Image (cartoon, rainbow, N blue to C red; front, side, top):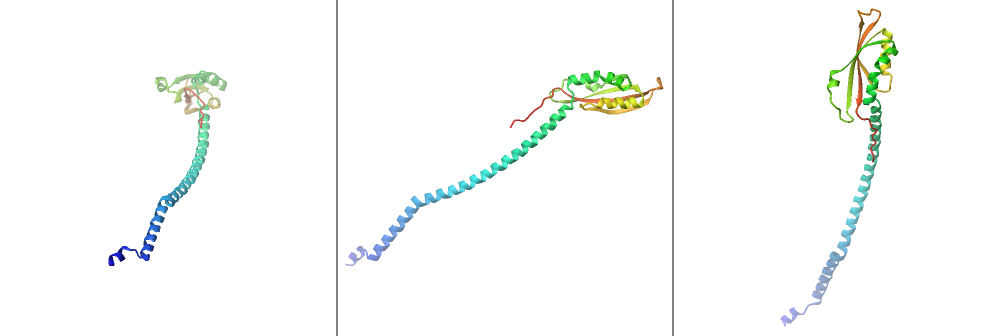
Length: 198
């Protein structure tokens, strides 16, 4: 009899077994149905947050690119305006060939024009390389005509530097002053306007 009692479940045991099955079923339903949706929703929220952060970063990058592009355009305009002040090879030859004429227009007599040894020894320059061409010019004239000559040499839009000036009296021509000046121009093999395409 005792064994039959043990084999027959008591109603409280039935309730416990039923409750256990309901709990196990609820856990199974949660793990198979609810948890994946919850994980999906969490992932979607993280994705939305990451996407909004990416949109903000993209906007910051776009704004930075606009600023950099404006800076680049400004620098290119500055570079091109600098190129406009440089001589090309044809303009340099014309400048040096016209020095005697400019000297005469200023009221000076050109005594000599000597090109720098370093300039004549330098080989072919690479494109867009800036080269300084220096000459030593010696003229005879009054002080006013010498200063007029220096102004005439520098009055154009091109960069001409008179680096050294030595004025002294000429023993052979006491009515004139002798002036020796070092004239430097800057030239480039090829001038081109470059625009950065973005």
